[in-house]
Amino acid sequence: MVWMRRVLAWLIRAATLVAAGVLALGLLLLSLGGSVSPGTQWVRSLVAVGDVIAGPFHRIAGPLHVGGPLTDAALNWGLVALVYLLLGRLLARLIHPRPRRTPSEGEPV
Image (cartoon, rainbow, N blue to C red; front, side):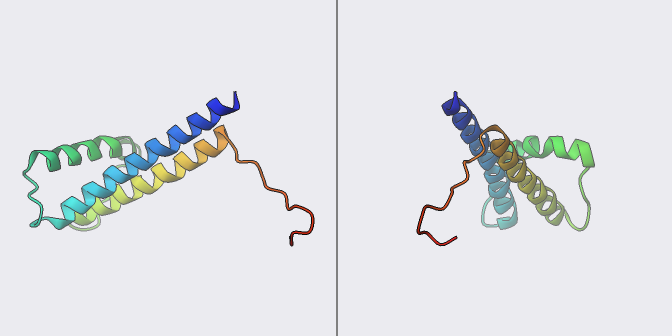
């Protein structure tokens, strides 16, 4: 039963890392602008997936508007990526807490 909790915790960590990675890569591609054509299909697909990933948080708090479109996207997607990473870590720890290591005899405390 412990191995199932360990696997589930690993899957949650992996899924949230992938979600944050998609958001970070989408931001990188958007910020490169002229170097990467935003009209290519794979860039549009990645940005669409990023919008879907960030969607639940936009419906809760609404998108922040502080500057231009790139600044807004960087702030919103960056915050959402951070929230995903923190929530993923918290959920994984709740599902499978890591055992605390006790110092062995003779080891400094």
